[in-house]
Length: 208
Image (cartoon, rainbow, N blue to C red; front, side, top):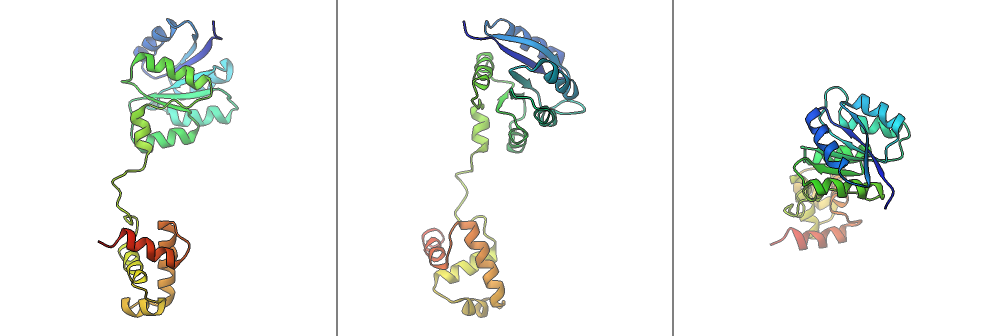
């Protein structure tokens, strides 16, 4: 028999906590050692119980799950926090992981996924719902150069034509210094170090 994993449940809905406690209580290697109804109580119980894994809701009155996670880890908690929530938007997921959560599950996942995630987190892994992991990936639909401003694209296009900074400035009616500023931004945005590379990038990505 493997070592028992102690779990703290944090959710402001009693029905949810009861359901989770019943689910996890039926699993031999999991032990629900406490339940908290809000972030403040979660912080107190994390300090006194030191559970291996905290299953944390995000949306709670007062101190929410993200802030509670941040505070718990600041207290020196060495276990793993796994979010179990209804929110799957990129901003919320990123904020939770930045606060220190190691896992992120959605409440409509299967019961065995919750159990597997707790075990995974206790072993030092990062259990993420596939739908959440997908939200964190950059969109493949983003077109090359989409992050460039209209003026930066104009400057880059003229660089690709082989024009010098002075010629570009004259063509666009701006100062040579401004051209250099735009070029610096262009290099940074497309990930190149010089105008030759920028010209090659433009010919490959911006020309029909």
